[in-house]
Image (cartoon, rainbow, N blue to C red; front, side, top):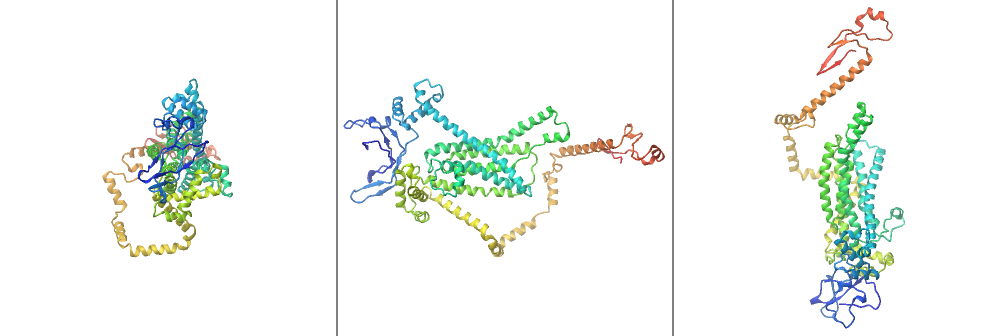
Length: 606
């Protein structure tokens, strides 16, 4: 089927009538300049449109609307979008690319350069000394700019995450939490929220376009350039540009979050020790302890980084399943690196309680709700995933959104035929957004819509109860729990009592474990494998104590010469005493005494 226009036209959507018995479900559309089409009257059966035309995406004509009886056995498709196919399905010759460049057919020109670069990657690099290189020079420079912007965005995300770590560490210190668990929990929450917004949400909000932002919210959105992008919704172009940037960011974080631990433990700390000793700064015991003491393992940072990556993957995985592979790699690498960093490159961590990990479990449901919302927008997009409405849910969706199917079809038609300036106006944008919310009830995403609605309602009620009704209803809830435990859980309570009675005392259990050779304590002295190391450490501690005591005594008393273990004479000097008094009363000074501590003599002379 061919349609000829007298003048150049920009076609954005179309519909087609077909006979019901032979209706096609897929349609391929080509747009051609008149010079590339055989003249009228000539045989066109051997003409191939892919040789001189621009290919558009295959249109899925699955939704049909029966017409009146004037045209029997016919049906009309719904409005089909006309979108250029960026996958370049046809082969393009040099001559055709040259013509496309002269006539400013950018899609054909880009497809030629893409297929040539696949054959010869050096085509995009200087010097441009061949006709093919000269042809694609402009395209190569544009690609280089896009890659540079992509790398800059990825590096910016990583750098900002490190700045946020430094700032929030200062903020938490200023808050002065009372326990180490409270300190870690607050720092973890701040780091996760800031990194998730910076990694996942900002990249989506900055590249999206929101024409009708209230003036009150613009105080926040304008400095951050939120809502000023070029994408009204997720499309194929969005995935090729923004989606690729997001995937690279996640993959880079697989290594940027984990490798610093190994580098610090194996490279940075040994170099600092060697440099300090070489410069002569570490000459005392205190300074040596500072450079040889291992750093703390930052559990709040590592947990925040891990859940940031996990929640980002859950958020965007509906449209980019390859993120699941990146998540599996991150979990594998993170496990072994954290294990090594904790056991070999960090000091013993403090004793945290369970609240740190319990709080992290609340992050996943929010990521699931965001996943369901984004998946509904994606799978409800009729350009990417066409599907029919769910008859059982479309009524609920119409009442919830406030638009009918007929009005939604008109809104989408007006949207596809509108210009960019017209799309920013309220009469076009507002009905279209409602129509997109109505698409949640289509067969491709209705189950995700139920998850999204149930999650929103559940958390709204939970936080409403916690923030407003908990002080009033907590006695009622406690009473209901007591009644339930009294009348409905008798068997369960009996079983718990039997389990509690059957538990042996820890002392007898400890003795049994010790007799069987099992480890029953975290202390080194109670473990056969580390008891020798414990004895060595204890011996070293006693030797150090003896050395310090003897040093203090030698500084306070001027001893005479000693021979072996017995002191021949001691002539200490005492203030405010003369020599005659000391000679008259020789008992005033007791002979020095030694206490044997292994191989160390501890002088206990007063």
